[in-house]
Length: 111
Image (tube, rainbow, N blue to C red; front, top):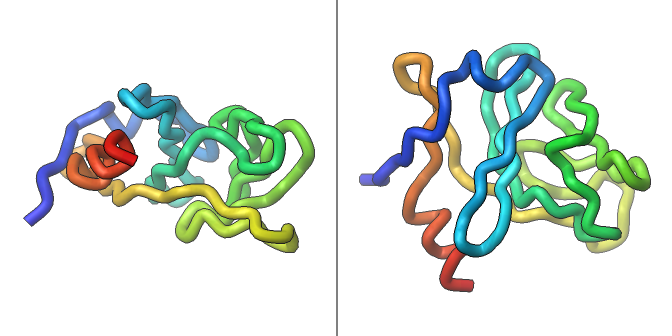
């Protein structure tokens, strides 16, 4: 069974927007879609390190603000880019709160 960390109220993240959560190993971007699904990805684009939390959320994708690379929020895979992928982390909403998987974040910190 997963151990979840409560990071924010769902309403703290605007629809089609993101917030950054700081960890010991760097920043995680938490995204909310127009249909209130939440996703967590590494905040740094593998291309040039662009801050994905500042990108444009459209459907279940985010576009990097620096060079327009498009990433799947679900898989972290870049669309149409060579070897482009960002790490994803389990996220869920429970009782109006966004939760992140503590074990996945700890694995990230240990890497």
